[in-house]
Image (cartoon, rainbow, N blue to C red; front, side, top):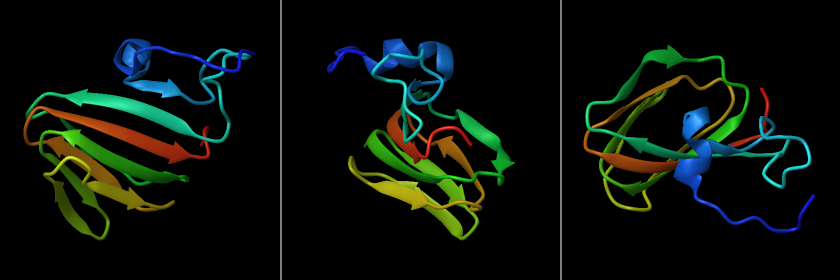
Amino acid sequence: MTASHFGNAAEEGKDRRGWFVGHFMPEGDLRCSGDVEVKWGIHSAGEERASWQDSETRTTVLLLVEGRFRIELSDGVHVLVRPGDYAMWGPGVGHSWRAEQDSVVVTIRWPSGG
């Protein structure tokens, strides 16, 4: 395994819905990790995950880079509007989302796998 890697998150994640670090990367690749997953999400206005996801067993943080992004969690609705706004939730918290404007978000969840 190499000790460093340089790339482009959007390009490297395009075949995995934006995910570019995690257990799903090739063995021996520095980006292969059982500890964490990282996603660079580019979402057009109106794009959504309408289905409710409630079987998550990991902790997740979603960070807004640009745009306006609505996240619905079991405990309420939150709209991320300023770069740097984020939502964080733990195992068992249901969620869905909708890009209210063209948006870029970074999602980190741990551990990888689940």
